[in-house]
Image (cartoon, rainbow over all chains, first blue to last red; front, side):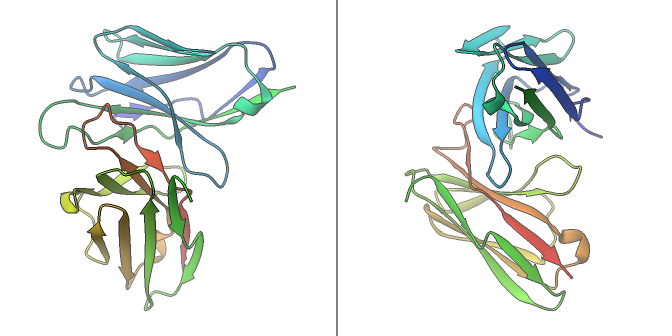
Length: 115
Length: 114
């Protein structure tokens, strides 16, 4: 059973508009969340993270929101640019206990930003 | 050369072959990881090394054998693979195994088992 779910395999957004990528998790032990971005023929690159003690983290055009009660996080990209077109992976981890550093990934959402 | 490099980028092998995947990181990190990404599946962690010591083996079949001679190099030795082992194999490294240390990924090796 998937512990990290990205239910939208793809998303298309017009350039300049907001992109919202969603992620749900089931494991209540997860307390650290990350977003990675992947271009074709490249490995994933770290984008932004959030600890469960926060509900929002912002870095330039990228903002991650965490709703612990709903076990849901989202990544907002504003404004969206064509260079943002990539596959975005949500990942989660616990920060205590054996193997706590292990990242559990979602399947990814392919974002296409249309010029 | 910077970052995390992987060779080869593509590999086709028969089920009776023996081959090795190589990963090298130039970031001064202490932890290295092997992940597998199969079609339409999430990335799955296979092995973790911290300061050259294996700290995790996520129930990976013995036909996959990792080796970490030093903190900069990681190998994945492959033998008698099955067609279902065809996947993208990604190497990553991080400063340590604390979660807040972000992992840096290599470009991956696309493996096809025939």
